[in-house]
Image (cartoon, one colour):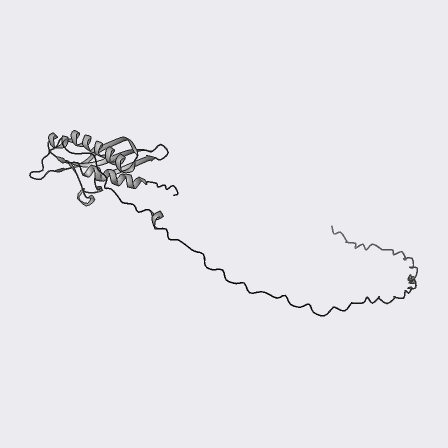
Length: 209
């Protein structure tokens, strides 16, 4: 049989701690709607797990009824969380921090004294769970009978292929190209330029006195 493994989430441990805190006399449940503006439902737990070491640290916020011995209530809640989380998960609870975040007046006949807390059981007895092993219900499996394989005949070879002859290329006759004659144009000799004499034009102005 193959070895099986499982992994606990932080929320699972937190839910166990919250139920354990709620089971202690003097620790009451408080709905978020009744806790006032920005209130939270109580009890509320936050778990920090070290899976490699197998340990857990838990912070728990609770609401207590009054008048009640608050210190005794927190001691019993701490012990109940430690034992019940350890029993149900197998983790070693190294520390439990308790904070009384709210309080609510106790009703008639609900007042609590230290003697009631001392006699309250903090342990839990897990209910046995019957696990049916799948190895006892393994059905035998038989292989289907072999089916005959139909023979496959290879196709008969076709007629022999005719040889392909090689036809040589025709001989290309060579020819020569006559040399090109380049005609150089002859330009006439330019006539020399005739000199041009410029006569300055002077305009005289008579000076009047």
